[in-house]
Image (tube, rainbow, N blue to C red; front, side, top):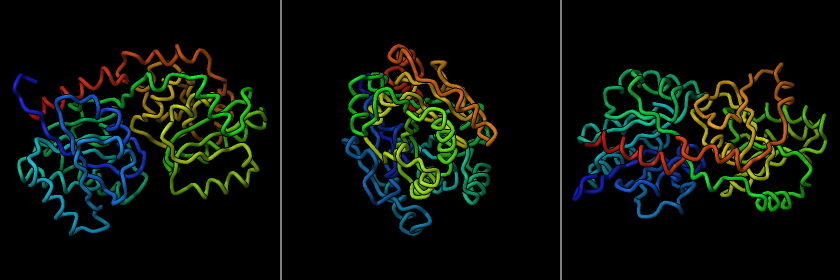
Length: 363
């Protein structure tokens, strides 16, 4: 920014209490945005997933439309007509709810869209998304997306979209022998055992039952193996029941939601992600930084494969043995992880680019 120019104020929509991709994106970038001040709107009365990391920012609660449309409308107006914001930064997986974008334009606030996924598995949201996509395109002063596939899903005219990659502080995720020992000791996993792992919400999109099927076949061939599933979600109980039906409950560990995913990545030997769809999964960036070989669904964008350590495979029943054959312990992990340094996924490089693009929209 030019000398004497004021910090720009932006209101960010919207965060939740889940440790999802949008929440991770802002926690990773927040400390590196020097000339921009962010306040946040959350869609939950609960504490945000990373709320303790958000310092010097206002956090407003706005209910979802389905919970209380009247209060939602009133609160959106109060926020946008209160403190003077230079822009609304609209972050979402879809365009099912765009009322805040329309309200921002009414009061003369610029609007930046930011797409974080490439699909939704809920029919009612898909219908609303496709309808709003036709009418909301003209409201965006700037268009961001985490990947090309997310841009195509989100915007009617996507060719002028700026790709903002889900970058991380790479040093935090480099392989650490001591962290590996600590986590494995916690779960009584011997060092010679192979640990398969995935990190994600226990929801349909993440396709965890397919992951369990892969592990069953692998475990039959290599009994000295574990599967660690990190994350929480509505399907946990159902998945645990499925694991018991396969008689694998001794070897499949449901870790739950945690703060130290970097430690667990060091404990893994290989990262497996058979998701039905993704935007650009930050956990896959983190797994590469931890030096892991990653086996992922072939619908996931190739843009994320910076290290060359990602293998893409189909996710049908006939392909399970293809996944099993690819399970090999990762080697030379520190050097593999360092390949991300200086790339678009290195937060020290990407934060400046993001800030530049935001200021271009505002100015």
